[in-house]
Length: 172
Image (cartoon, rainbow, N blue to C red; front, side):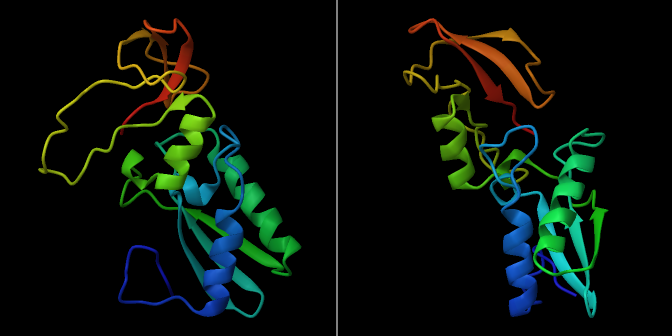
C-alpha cells in the first residue's frame, strides 16, 4: 500500500504512473487545474492484478464534484488498461488550499482567478497581508462583492484599480 502522505512508504513504479494518470484528470469545476494541481489525489494502491484503489480527498465535505472526479479517474485508468478501479473518499487529513501546487496557483492566476493565500502550518506565522491581489492588474485594492461565486469554494471580488470583477479561490 502506498500513500502520498507517508514518505516512508515509496510507491512502486506502476503506482506512481497510475497516480500521474489520475492526477492528470482535469477538475470538473475548474478545468484549468488538474486533480494533481488541486492536491486531491492522496494515494494510489495496487490491490491485486488489474485492481487499483485511488484515495481522493474532496476540497470540502459535500463537494458536488467528487462524483464527477471519481468517474473521470475511473475512466482515465480504464483507458490505461486497469479493469477494476475503486475511488475511495478520504476525509483525513482534510484538504487545505495549501495542498494546491505552485503550478496550480500559477494556472489559477493566468485564468483570472486569484489563488488562495498560503495558510502555512497550524500555529505557524500569520501572513503579514490579508490583501487579495487582482489577477488582471496586480492591484491589492480589491473589494468583496459576494462570499460565493460560481462554486462554493470561490468568492466574487472586484478590483478598484482596473474595475474588473474576478473570482478568488477562498482559503481553507
